[in-house]
Image 1 (tube, each protein chain N blue to C red):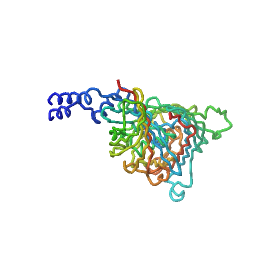
Image 2 (image 1 turned 60 degrees about the vertical axis):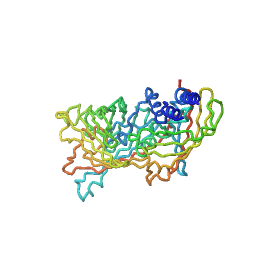
Image 3 (image 1 turned 45 degrees about the vertical axis):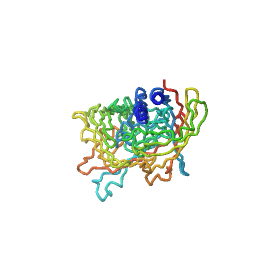
Image 4 (image 1 turned 90 degrees about the vertical axis):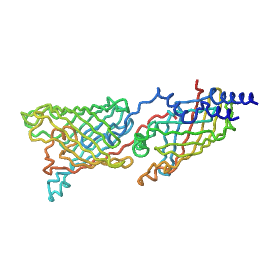
Length: 183
Length: 292
């Protein structure tokens, strides 16, 4: 009995402590899209940092708000100055965990439907959300793709009445990240 | 069994917080330079240039009006009976370089300028933005005395400025503008051909879309025309989408560097104040390339 406990303990240490498999990217892509009858607005950030710990199912994202590129320079300025207050809140982050780890096999090449639950921080406001997406396992690499809506009011992003018809109250956020195995 | 549990719990698990820390440590070395944006709302503080540029591929149409002196009284409807105006277009060539041309009713002037950003303020890397501007102004008003020999070159005036600006906080930005203006022909025999001035300006945001601006140009003693005053302007910037409205009060009649820095005659504190406004409207002619 005692021996089996020891073996169990050792194997647990082995799994969770020393053989962590971490995937990372520094140039992931996050974009958003606002669609109204008056105007469509989209912006792309190609400098997103993200890491996935395949051992624990933890997943984190971090991006600089000023890294979003718009079709018009003035939109970009207003986005940073008036809506996101990027000097005050330079980063947006997500910290979460794969909620259905039993559906994903990181050792087998294939595409898996995943649900991720965690905290999304935008404009200094932290919200717990659940996001569905797909995770593709390749050889020493991963791809994560997801699209999910967020409501601007939830993150206290104020839209003045004057432009309310040009900016959608709910934005679609798309994530597209290619990860490499961290050496 | 308890032993197993305790050992398991004390294992060096990488939790979410740690993963975030690990990522920040990993990405630290490739941290991108974060340039300060929107030090001022537009490319002019009031009359003179700010360190802001028009973005590349963007055309900025600017229409500026200055009514007559408020000291004109009720007879002139406090200046509203007269107007001096300038219409101009500016264009951004690159991130750092812009050009512009304009025409003023004041002395039927044509002007052209170029502005280049040498240094850009960046978080933890560079404290100030530094730009240079050069402008040429041509007075096309007919010569006062057509009987004497007049040269076209007499009507040219040149201005060079260094703009040193800093966004201190989200709401406060300040700027210094050492300026030199050269006249080919001066109005009086004792007037200097080169005029040196130091400008100071700033803006204070009241709300996200409205700011108070002020601008003052000090002409150094011995380097100014007789009977001229230093230019002072106080105004508001109001931003609405693609437009910026600038409402202002100034003792200067003209809107080109030579006109307001060296040829201001109004005494601000005696009521020689022009109410005026500038409307700026931007048009995106060339959309920036984005990696999709």
